[in-house]
Image (cartoon, rainbow, N blue to C red; front, side):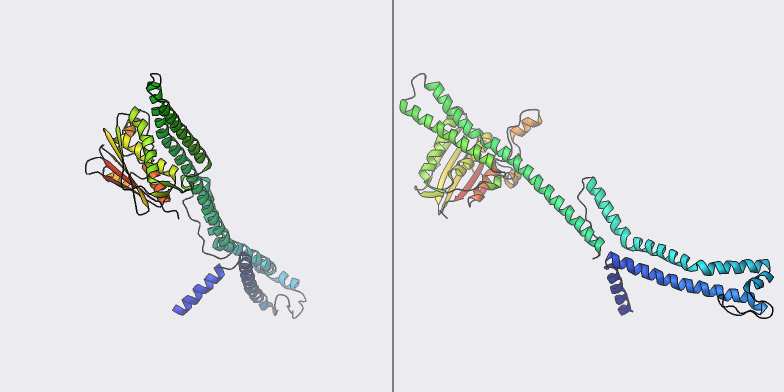
Length: 410
C-alpha cells in the first residue's frame, strides 16, 4: 500500500507540474473519453429499450437496422399501431439516441473546463489577486508561494521576485534617506566647534586689539589660525556635499608628528577657554613620534569628544594625547555626572540622547541642540582608521572616553 500511495503521489505531482497547455489537453482528452463512454452507454440503453417496445410485434434488430415481418413493411407503420404512451417513449428514445453525442461532448467539455480552473487556475489566481491587493495597500509584508513548475508557478515566482525587488528598492531608498539625514545631522553637529573657535578668536581680537594689548605677532598668529579654521570649514563643507553617506568618507593618511597634533589641540582649546566657563586642560604623554594619520579625521573626532564633554562637564575637561606601538590614543575626561548603565551600552549608537539636558529642554518646549550622534561619529571614524572607541566612568568621577587610531603608513 505504501508503494502504491507513493506512486499515486508521484503521478499527482507529475500532473501538477505539467504545463498549462498540456494539462488542458489532458483534461479535454479525458472529457472526450468520458463523453464517448457516456454516449455509447446511453445509445446502448436506448437501443435495448427501443427493441423491447417493438419485439411484441415481431420486429427484431437495432434502431438503425430493423427488419419487419408479415404485412408491416416500415417502422412508421409499426409505430402507428402502438399505443400513444409507447409511441411517445420511442420518439424520446430516438431523440436521445441522436443528440446524446452532442450533449455528452458539451457536458464533458464544460466539466473539463470547470475542473481545470478549480484544480489548476483558481489557487494561483487567488494568490496573485491577494498579492496585488496587498501591494495596492502598500503592504509588502507577505509571500507569494505556489508549489508548481507550470506557467502559473513561474508567474507566481516572478511576482514574488518582483515583490522582493520592490522591498529591496524601498529599503535602499530608506537607507539613502537615513544616510542623508545622518549627513545633515553630522554637518550641523560638527560645524559648532569650529564656529565656537572662530568666535573665541574674534572676541579675543575685539576685546584686546583696540586697547593695544595684542601684539602684531599675536594678531598675525591669531588671524592665521582663524584662516585655518575657515579653510577647514570650507573643506568639510565640500566633503559633506560630495558624499552621499557618512560611510563613504575616505581615509587619507599623511605623515605628521604627535607634537604637531598636540599643537592643533591647543589651538582649538585656547579660544574655548577664553569664551567658556569650563576650563580645558591638555597634556601629552610619552615622547614625540612620527605618525601616519588623517589629520582632518582626527580633528573631527577631537571636536566631537570635546563638544560632548563641554555639554556635561561641571567645571573642567581634560584632554590627553598619547602614542604607543603604532597607535595614537586620545583621552577626554569631564567632571560631569558620567555615563549611566544605558549610556555605557548605547551612547555610541546613532541618535542616542540619554539624559542630555538639551533633550529635556526640547520636551518642555525648548530648542533642541543635541543630535545624539557625536560619539557615533567618533566610533565610525575611529573604526575606519583601524581603531576603536571605548566608554567608561573615571575613578575621579565623570565620563571618560578613549579613542585609538592605527597610525602605520600601510
